[in-house]
Image 1 (spheres, rainbow, N blue to C red):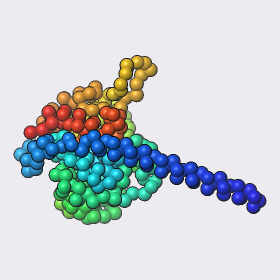
Image 2 (image 1 turned 180 degrees about the vertical axis):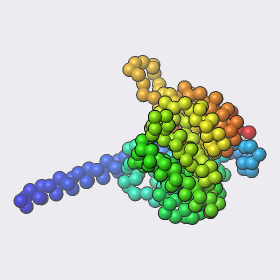
Image 3 (image 1 turned 60 degrees about the vertical axis):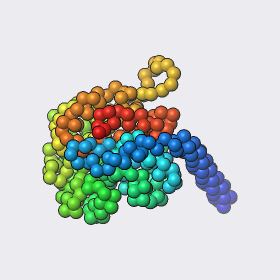
Image 4 (image 1 turned 30 degrees about the vertical axis):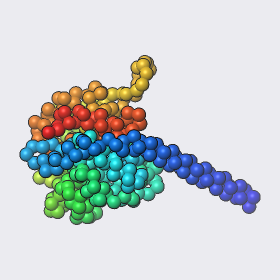
Length: 346
């Protein structure tokens, strides 16, 4: 029995050592890749950055804020210098702001890091960095702070104070984890929870937006989806929306109709395009669709942009997770920035 236990222990130790070696190797590989990308971009922001500094007070009078979602640059923020350079490159590409995630501006567990990495949304080591200082030095604003409903229900004041510390009055709930969007009763309860959370934040001078994915398109009645119920059952005084058109297209929804239904309740718009970018011939079998740079896919972004502008959208936030040009999120941000500036720039 003892011999068997020793063998098992040896196997366990060997497995743990193997996992450690793999993780360490991946970390080294990722660091090399990031450093190579950063070297390529270090000299790109000078003239453009100086031009962009004149727009700092243009968030009024109908100006639409253009921003990048922080998840896009998670791996680029492995240290302070690289993070600052990345933010300055975003500023130089013409964007006004960044949308922060509360789980990326504070220390996260190894499990969270591994889960996000294997899901295609690596968060990197940005939680160790001084984000208030980074935002100040980069010249970028914070358009909003992504959080979660549980955290708001636990301490709305703390979440509101965190948002306000970055100069934003907007907190976004990023959808519900492991929630059944096909259950009408549960969806109606969710709407009420959103109303209560929005009211609690409003008392602290902060507003609440709800961000969709594609699961909200589940039918909860014969003629209504969960998303339609959430729209109907939430109070516009306390709950509004950050609309993600990519996920709704992915789910087969009539995106134009949804944007028209939201109207002025669509305060922010998560934008990306849908298609596939690759080198070489496009041959069968059918390619897997993926997010691609704005204007390079098949979504009717021109029509959606017209509706967003007509309805008074306040900010447009770029977000893709992968399929970047040369595996470089900065290049992808820059290329999409050309479309963003054409549609929403001054």
